[in-house]
Length: 256
Image 1: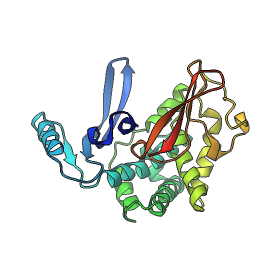
Image 2: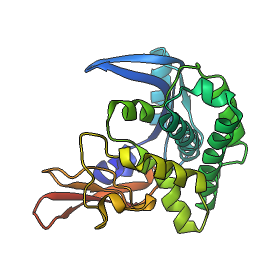
Image 3: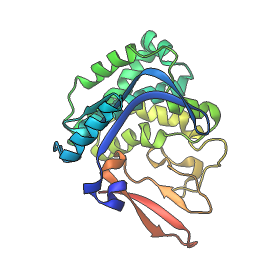
C-alpha cells in the first residue's frame, strides 16, 4: 500500500510479534512477554539502511531481527494469525483452552494448514514445518491471550475476517484448493464481520447474502467504500482510487 504511494525504494517490509490491547486512546497494555520486530528489504537485499535501522533498534533496547526474506516472514505470521484469530474469535476462549482441547487444537491446525497450502500454491517458498513450529509457539503463549479479532468481536467492532480466513477462501477458490475449515470460519463469523455499528453494505449486489469469498472489507460511508479484491498481504498490493457514481472516492485493491 505504501509502496504505491511513495515508491518501493522507500519501503521495507516488517512484522511485529506482540500481544497488546488498547486500554484507552493513547494507552496500550502489553500482554505477552514476546515483543519482537522483524523487518527487511522486499528484494531480500541486506541494504545499508536496513543494517543501520537494525543497529539503531538494538541500541535502543528493542528486540529485533533483520529478516533474510521478509516475504516469507510475513507469510509465516499470516499462517499463525489466521488460525489464532479464527479460533479465539469463534469460541470466545483464550488460547490456553484452545490448545489443550484435542478438537479445538485439531481445527486450529487445519485452519493454519490451509493457509500454508494456499501460500505454497501461490509460489511462496515457505516450508511444511511452519505449522508445527507455530503450534509449538502457541503452546508457549500465556494462557489468557486472545487475538485482536476476538477482542473486536466481543466489543462489537468490525472484524479482520476478510483479510484472514476470508483471504484464504478467496485465494483457495482461485487456485482450486479446498479450504473447508476457513470457509466454516467465514460462515460462522459472517454476521459479525461488519460489527454492530454498521449494517451490511450492498456489496456485489448481495448484501447479507454475499458468499464467503465476497466478504466486504470496509463499511459504506459518506467518504466512499473500501473494496478488497485480492487476499494477499498488503505488501503485495496497492489501493487504487476510482470514481464512484455518487462522486465519492472509492478505493479498490489490486495486485501490484
